[in-house]
Every structure is written in structure tokens, then in C-alpha cells.
Image (tube, rainbow, N blue to C red; front, side):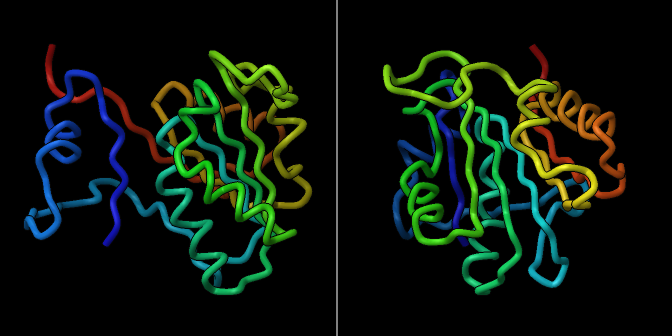
Amino acid sequence: MVITVELVEDGEVSAFLIEDLIIGDRIEIRGPIGGYFVWEPSMGGPLQLISGGSGVVPLMAMLRARIESSSDVPIRLLSSTRSYQDVIYRVELEEATAEDRGVEIVHTLTRSHPPDWTGPTRRVDWEILSEHVWPADKSPLCFVCGPTGFVESVATTLVELGHAPERVKTERFGPTGGG
């Protein structure tokens, strides 16, 4: 099993997992709690993945499954991240696009970007989705993962763009506990 942990400032669990846990420690993992958010090669495509921040984590599992199965399903990932340095799996994503013509990845950077950056530099909106997502007439399977507001906005816009609601799968996350 592989897990990806993003350190959350003042976070209890992420800090423990990153700073205290060592190889060989045993932990109990439960979940996922919620719906079925999985793509398998037998489901076909094209496959459209859209992530906000660490929402790329389950989508990366789908990309890896596609690559490992030698599937030829075309796949596009639209990833929204604060900065280029914050892109989770950046090197692995770059390698995937370099090695496989059926994999396309677009990053939009919302807070800062390198001086030579030529990609989008704002939050995912109607225009970015219209330009970088498979059109509805291709009937892609769409998987959207990220913070709740991001997921709701993207999923709503995909349906407005003509995508069948049953082909738009969502997974969201947000703050937990009381304040």
C-alpha cells in the first residue's frame, strides 16, 4: 500500500505521519468512507481527471493503473495547484507525458508561477474547462477531486458544458472537526 501525505500546518495527523512515523511502524487504516471513486482499464474512456491541490492523489492512482495495464485509453489531467513547487508528483507526471503520447497534463497555477510559465495562471473556470477538458461529445469519464467548493464548481460546469451527470464522478475533502 502507498499513501501520500501533505503536511498541513498545525495538523495533528499529517505531522505525525511525516515527522514521527518510521518504516516498520504499524498503523491501522480505515476507509474510504463514501462512494466508489475508482477507474479500472475495463471501464474505458477517454478518461478526464481534474484535481485541485492534493486531490491529485486518487487521480494519480488512476493514471498509474492506466500506465501499468498498458491500456491505450487516452487520458487528460487538468491539475490546479498554488505554485509549480506545490505540484504533487510533478516529476512522475512529467515522465508520464514524455513517455506516453496518450497522456496529456495541464497545470494551472493559482498563486505564483515561474517567469517562463506559459500555462494558465488562475483558478479552474469555464474557459479553462472548455479549453482543456475532453468535449462532451467524446463522452469522457470525468473524475474530479479536491476541496468541496472546487469539486462542486467543476462538476456543475462540466454538466453545463454538456457532460452527462452520470459520467462525472466526484470525491471531495474539507476541514474536519469543530473549531
